[in-house]
Length: 86
Length: 201
Ligand SMILES: [Zn+2]
Image (cartoon, rainbow over all chains, first blue to last red; front, side, top):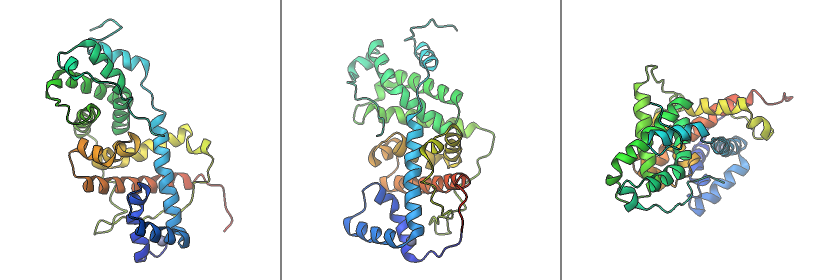
């Protein structure tokens, strides 16, 4: 996809992370929000960037420590509820 | 929203006496997070389990060197990351720098894929296949950027804590985080845009 990246878009992309983390100062925030209102491409980048982070978080939350891995861990530390089978 | 280690009371003096009960509590409080970090860092269960065991064996052996100035989770994450990085360096398959390509010469990142796939149903976004694509995208990051991303966005550490784990400045951490996030967005957009319903131009 070809689109022109004028200075405003580049600045916006550079500031998106700080914006997502609530670390952007209020004046820049207002400018950035105004740009997102008027620029479809940056708005899409913002939406998909936010969603990307959210999906990776949800994916991480689905990871559980398997019971057998936990048992082998405790066994390797001599804290086992299972016998050390070495 | 983010799951962090429960704030269990850590009895440092009991740990330093190598009290088994205190150590078992430490293991149970932190092992799920350490396992997840290893899994996402290395991309497979066996390596994740090895990193998990090594981390707690080293923690047990070196608990005297933990001074209690930072959180014990920070210390454990650091051991686990060093262990992960060591394993990654030993891998024979050469790492291709996939972070290149979206960066201009002066290091700015220009988004290329502009498709709004956020409207896809959650079921599709979090399907088994999608989660494999997410892991592939995470694996495609450089080790340094992946570590920064996992600590901040998956483990939910603050910028300061994540920088402390990696022993880098907060501004360096922010640069790595930004590159990681933008690269992931690029890769996931490639993946999900192919799954968008046909639209008429
Ligand atoms: Zn723009």
